[in-house]
Image (cartoon, rainbow, N blue to C red; front, side):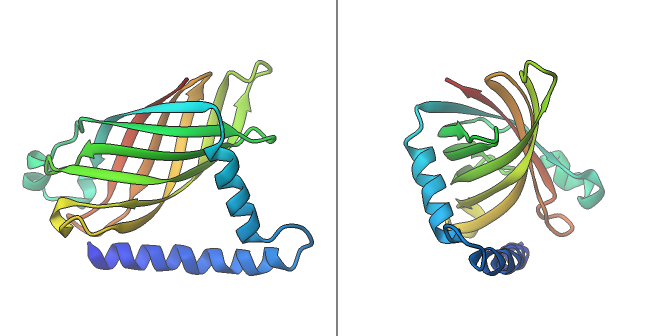
Length: 186
């Protein structure tokens, strides 16, 4: 599992660096300036979010049955964030969440999330989102050492309510978890 986390993190950071170099040649603010600006603007947003973990589904094709039978897939927890929609209607968030992991141990996560949104209908009440989170978590089985966690995000949303998901990749009997939570903006 540790090797998977390190490999995934390195691959994401390495691939993002090519985009950073490509964008740095374009006139306008650099990548670092854009990141700082987005974080600052999001942090100062008046919109607050409540996160409620709903489900952690372990991909049955990637686990032994005795493992999945022993895992917690209904994680108790709560989270809080600050978020905003930019001028293109895309979502940005800074958040913190705590939940029970698969072994019923507390797992915290903090991060920055971004989703490109596609609006359905003229009233723009319904939207689909696809994006990423750049986060840090800490797990009991890794002695709560901070672990970087770049992950995909996808959601379906109606007005101020969203069902968001991420998929944690892994190897056989590790990772390969679909994590789902509800988000309410207020």
